[in-house]
Image (cartoon, rainbow, N blue to C red; front, side):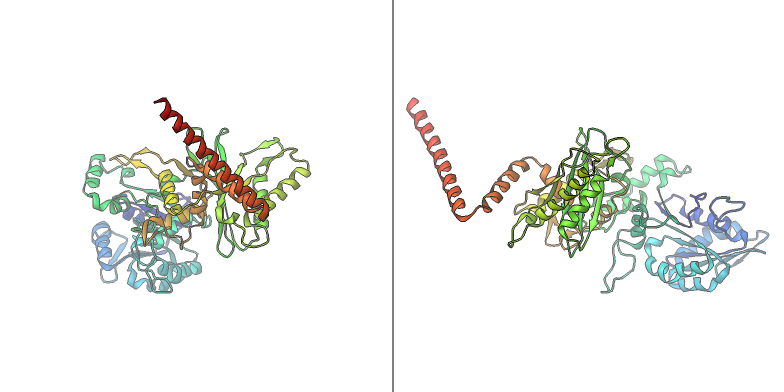
Length: 506
């Protein structure tokens, strides 16, 4: 971590992982390539000032009396100021300890400021401190920042425009953004717990874990294992864990491709491509978030995205293209005289594939077909249960993953990762997720899971037959209904005659 060239370093570390020692080392000697002799990012020994921000004054007092004063009191070349809580190196820079309530003092350091340490920053209003004070000051002086903390899935003091607490903490959201590639190359993120600390005996670590009872599992996962729990209580999918579910893997050659889609125009729509391995493992590999596009244009772009998987030089697919795309059955409903949303989507996909084959790249290729996902009165409950099932995983008492999840998500799927982590339960029914939230990626993915569920194909066939009948003219529809009644009566007569024959035999 010290050798990384990143300007802004975020360390999500659990208890006893040496966060304070790391902060102190970087404040003194700097960090980055060339450290400690000529580091890219300078500390106080190179003549720069460093500000150390803690949650409150008692926490800073603990650092002062446990870490700084015992090391530097009376040491030649260093000066301590008890009143100001500063450590100065003669002829060099100064380390300033500042509590969050006095964070505005960061502005007073000016061009002499080399960097800022934000200690345990998941436990105060980091969004305000970073956006309003720290980042503008670092812009002026070209300084660095080190953000270290145990994570916090609850509120950190930040409020939205309505005055409500924002959850999870800004620190947790920042970690997710970095892991999702939504922050630039200046940012880097690390995760560790006390098991990576060579001075901690494994037996002592297990004893620490044992101190947490069954009602303290959220605290255990955050404080000890430093897991990124997003949103705390009320999450629709609390089993989601970036360190468990996200891996940069590719589908195998025998993996079966599929896709799920949730339509949206005024609100975002989403489509994701999955690959099912022969052993049943599922990989969510690609996604696309879209908004305010006509259905035919969306379909055309979906087709182009899949056609981009064709390797012209090798004359083969880099990855398989789905045969079917599971879609909300409401998109197949005819509400007027025009085409349905599903028909427009299909028209766009077919157009993309026709143009591609006409260009001579591929002579024979079949475009994916949109298929209605079975949907009944308990649809949301079923979707939630199926997503829970593929997310489920288990660790043993030592924290070793003994039962991996059925689902793996590629790092490229940032929208699914972001939304599944934050989606809430329905406040009126815990068996549902809150469809008023940003649920499009989860619901689109769930449509595919529903389509894969046992019996789904039979229900789909029944719906397709009903859809075909609805397109008939009134005379033909009456004829079809008459034939259906005749078939039903014939079946009833057949069973009645069989029962009569059985009684006669007895």
